[in-house]
Length: 159
Image 1 (tube, one colour):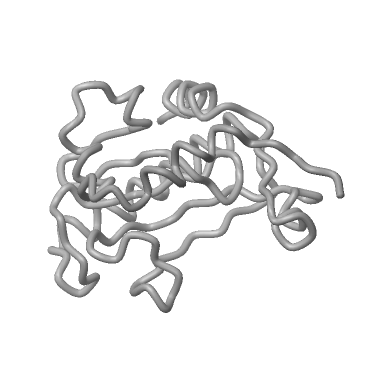
Image 2 (cartoon, helix red, strand yellow):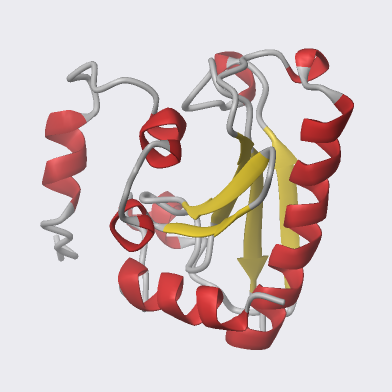
């Protein structure tokens, strides 16, 4: 059997259950946006790269407030999450030239939420011929660009 190596995944596997608190709340309080992979901050919400993405450029938009129920977001929070997602589409289109996008809310563990207690909207760029077949065939993901490079590119392209 051939193997594709992703040694950086070990850090995630080992730290996934360490109880380090909410990934979104840690990013909100970070002094270093680049290190926290935060691309853009608004008044009520912010945008960050997914550290373990479905595809290159996979962003998440979340309210600053720690809230697990979509229906409990204020009008201002929900509006800004969607406004930032719209701006993210523009930044991704300019910097990465995807052929399409997936946007989605995974609400609850059964619906695929990895973080169930802080709602967030996924923004995933897609390309014809992207490597989404790899998780099925080889149980791996192929990411052609380092997260730090993607973050810098998106931050520079933000409208």
